[in-house]
Amino acid sequence: MGFPKLKYPRLCRLIPYVVVLGLPILIITITVFLPVSDAVKVVLIMGYFGVLLWYLFVNFPVLMSLDILLAILCCHRTARKQYILPSRCSAGRIVRGVSRYGTACEPTPIEPRPSLLRYRFSSPMTVYSRGIERVIASYEVDYLDKDTYGRIFHSAKNNSTALIGRKKALFLDKSQKKEALHRVTVILILAHSIDPRLVPTLYDLVCMQCGDEEEDCVVPCVVDLTHNTCVFNSLRVPYIGFGYPVKNRGIRLIKRLVFGGNLNLRSNNQVIEFSDINPEDSVWSVWGNLRRDLIQDAKEEKKRCQSMTPGEIRIVEDMLYFKWDERCVSQMIAVDTDHKTVKIHSVTNWAYPKPHAISKKCILEIERTLTSHFARQGYSVSFVELDDLM
Image 1: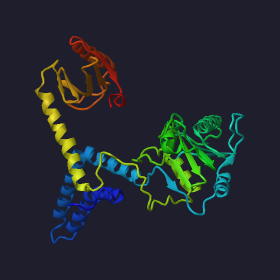
Image 2: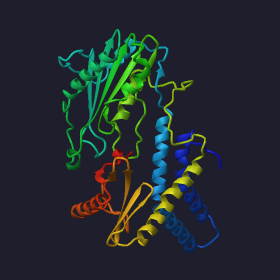
Image 3: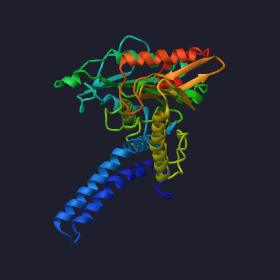
Image 4: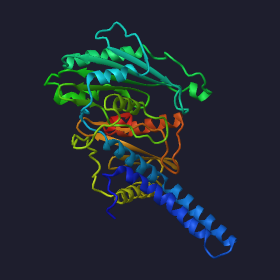
């Protein structure tokens, strides 16, 4: 089935919910009206619920991965490297909108000083933060080059840092008090002209040094008043039900204050490509591929671990398997034969027979054994985070 395609991610994201939850509800509704006794109906409905729970348990990794993938595609749908400003947009209109947001704050003496520095605090709606701070630092310059941008960025970060903890939530439970303070800083630069040498790299520049997208993020936004364009890092972070990413809050602020709530994506082809996905693929093919990759690979990994002998080390493509007594670890590995180095993803959990945490003492012994194994072959070993393996 070729519909719906991934280029319609919002529709695609509804499909798994309709299939997994909507279809059983329809079957149960039909069962209620069957010309059979109530006892039979109860048995059939309980059977349907049992099958549904079993399916959800077995396919949970697939459904979760599919939902995250489609959420990422939804974020890419509205992301562009550059936007055209609305016809009614002007520097005065933007400044008036910013001046009405939150409360005014006195800037620090660091030059250049923002023409407007606004602060707003919100009490948390979830247990994942102890408060939400939004800061807008607005600058208006006649000419923007790389050096000026750097000085503005430095000034805005210092002004934002000075406002940390300006207000606090009145009522927090014990778990919230231990959570991080969520902060987003929007750096709004209204430029009457921009250095032509800066224009080709402007998008990459505003995406640099932006901090933690989940908890403490900086979102620079450069408005070119001469050409009526706007450049900012508009790629939202997928929201999957936990703490709402602060980067998304900054993007919403820019969308509201600069664009009046409408990014106007029509005829804007400066998209940010998602290289791993073909937008013409159907959600059904991706669903099937994920099921094969996750469930079938898990079965093959289980068989591989069962066939290994205690103490055996086996490398399959970019994965390392090590049997420790009756348990087994499965780690990503990168081997550099030229420099005689081995990078292994840090050991934290068992892969077989069940995924669960490994004690610190056991982790040290496993790492010592793996280090000795590769050292005998002339390799130096380091245990690194996943990002350092890519």
